[in-house]
Image (cartoon, rainbow, N blue to C red; front, side, top):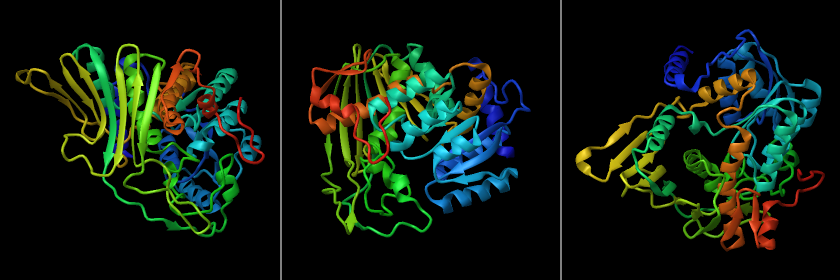
Length: 436
């Protein structure tokens, strides 16, 4: 706690120009807070909420009762709160009536749970990306507007100190006119070996976990955590990592979206996707290249899960290519400007990350509470976060369609391609109804 308080005081001072403060208008006020998705990352978010001293945890929800029970024990040990445990978020919202809902479920659940929480009158912190498909994300924006609640999305790189510093440097004109942006995440890897399917763990409602998405056989490659690389539940590396860095592109440019998108990729190293009654692999691409054509510049996304990137200085982040040089905004390597004239010398800012996970969740949470109390938009408001989330979803849509698409960012429609437009939504399974 001492180190966290020191971190918050130091980093908050760096954001004096942002005019928010951690404890808001009434530091005595504690919000009735519920967590939906109580695994590792959900508890990371909730622990920051508890550390702020601004919440009373009233409920936890998870499809696996052991996960919820363990999370409940952690909450009790940290705060003395004794949250009620649920498997169905709808029952939680009806019975507990929380003021704040934190949503840390897989991507295919974000829309339905956010919309339900908004309709229940709760403010929402939902993990990125906003949705699994574009029309889900649009429905989330509509629900938040109609309910008049604050919805913050987990794009914490908008508020991380070195990201803010780098963005200010970029917008100052120090890089010159930017004609191209390259966002990327490169790692090592190899061929993927199928893993045997197994029994659903005792106490887990697998039907509820799959929810509106197709139901696959249970497999530990899929849960916990691996769902990000199964296209029924997420959008692979581009949806997971890409949304952070493509968000930086829109944050810089102020544009609503591209006018044209093309994406290609495959599983040339990982190998063909496998799904049968006995075993399965992931099915997301092991590499993708997406090109986003904007009015004044071109942006690309690149990820590769093989070969590593030891030939370059950076393995993740965003390059902004300007007339005066190249700005790299990264993660644990901070930001660096490489001028065209090397005699001018590189400029660099170290990362200022909250450890051990290397993210800035405490600052994002502080901004969320302040936005609620001042009735303002948070730094990662649902509307702008929706626009950023659309970029990787458009890339994946182009990849699935096998062709480039024309995008009207103002109307949020695909132009002149009725077949590709069908991919803006998808069929839901069973009782679940796709949001409008």
